[in-house]
Length: 231
Image 1: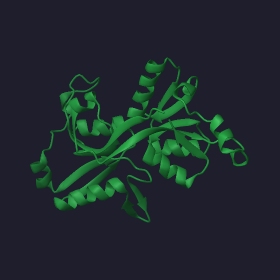
Image 2: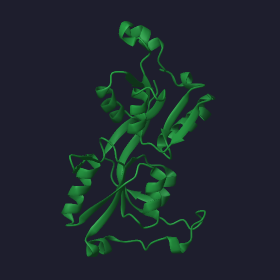
Image 3: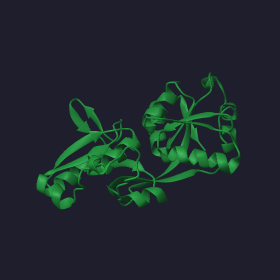
Image 4: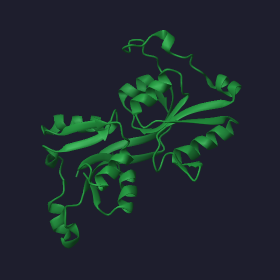
């Protein structure tokens, strides 16, 4: 069965200004800071998403995968680390573009458009995009075959379904491409929630389907046996 492949990257270093952006003037853009300027100030400003894996506060202490990487990076350069928490990808990129942040630390797939605007680090891992869905009602009394027969296990089964995905994410672009490739009618709803929150919403029964990276689906699935992922 075909899988959606994406590469996970953590940060990109700079964004090329776009003077044609609607409502944008040159006065809205802060001067770009190079490494020398950052070192002179002694502080680096980083946008990252806040969730249970990337960055979160536990008992008053910041934690998370992205936070640990960024803290080691800042410590190596002897810089103070300033975290700007944003779960909206577009807003994170705008902060970088306007010079209000120096780095963005969010898992992103590389696309031709993004490569024209920003510089990526080396990839940290490879991940597959998977569909997250709840098991059918009464699944605990069903056989494995009965459960499978009621789940979306083929791309064509998404025809007529509604899938919620993070706004501006590669998940949305992949679903739009899938529609064109298969001729299916998928209602794609982009919302300002990150992939982890949307997977949790599926687990809670608030939405039926979302798409996220397989490692995230595995984490959520290990905490809630009501969900399955596939495709």
